[in-house]
Length: 219
Image (cartoon, rainbow, N blue to C red; front, side, top):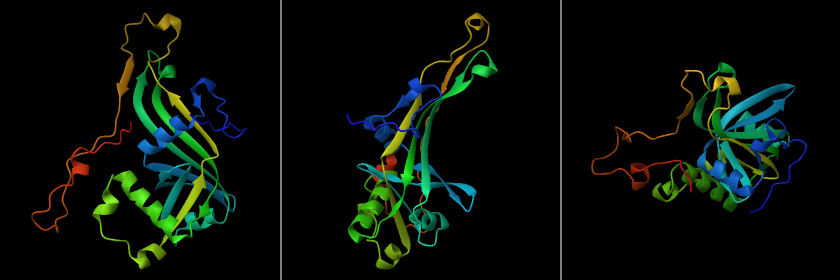
């Protein structure tokens, strides 16, 4: 198990016992999620933009339109903060003050680098596609050069990284445990509904196996 060395920017200070710096925990969270929030500053104005991502080894890829202001700004070398959060449950205590959530989160700090190499760009795009739906890249038509040119891909190396995790029941004041108030955890999870076919789909094309039992849970 490798470790990410905590820095003054990634050291978890609030409830430090929830902090994790091992790659196993960080990678598991990143691999289960698929939506991140990207924070950066342009001319003194902060922005936080939701977008998809994919992890390959020890880096995270972002992608989007070549005209995207976010991607063009990040490619310029500004500092960036990428966060991913998975909510596992609502923690209901005997007081409103001690209500919480069970969650797993990752914070990545650093700078993004534009991917110009065609082979790496295709690797990143296949990773995006298969991260959302496993095996999907091989099921669709080959990407066109015009589509590749219209798409920007950035990568952020996993160097300054930390995870924060809360698990377990509520933590109430000692005198509150005898109160006649229900307390506990309401588990939450992301589940997929039944696939809805495109109205223009020709007859006889069945639902892919990857969608029949779709799950974000990762081993």
